[in-house]
View (cartoon, rainbow, N blue to C red):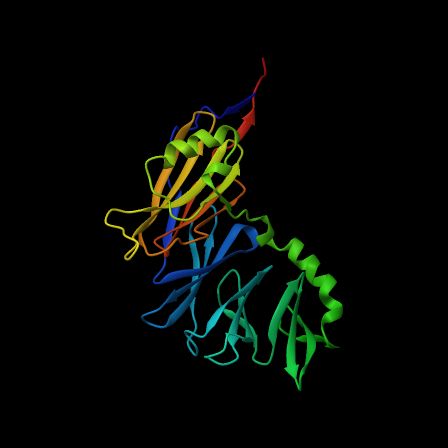
Length: 294
């Protein structure tokens, strides 16, 4: 049978939290357990990038662009580089320009204003330039930004791009899946039914099963909510199926106008969730170890 450590508490607490000035827009996993994020302040029209230590929540650096504060975004993290994109023009969504920051310090290492990011793999960055109705591919050195190769077209690199996707650290993240209440089976179904039976749900439940734990969130109508003026609460919960108990609960948003998806993800035994769209929090699930069998 499986036994929890004798030090396992019957309830879980937040291990750490990090709040930014604005809305958490994007999060990516980096090397050595780091988390790189993008935070956008709508009022100031300012974008900041940050790097946290995933285990402790310690802030390694905070980076704000000086020449362009708004029309930029987090593109990718590859090895010891954080890649930031610009936009072709402020009123068009197409990406153009590439800026590389050092993962350890957040300082700019190199930039290329003429290219558009495609993918990164190992120690190379694959980009393209649109020229006279055709795309010319280029391979840049990840460390320095130096152009190593030029290709007439990019189609022949599709297989390499698929390899890059498979080895991307983001592939190890488990995002929640939509779950209708009637679709829950086995040991988790009574836990879900007990939780939602007295509430009016709006939208589907999002859930991840990790060992004996069910991590889930759902939106329910708050007091005073109406079809004309909806007010929703985003409820976040962790259940322990071994005890049948709720071991963690939080309200991620108290006054949403519509369901907000993708407010949490799981990496190994760490559960990361976003509170009020601006605060990244982490709860660590206890490790399950094998015990003697009868």
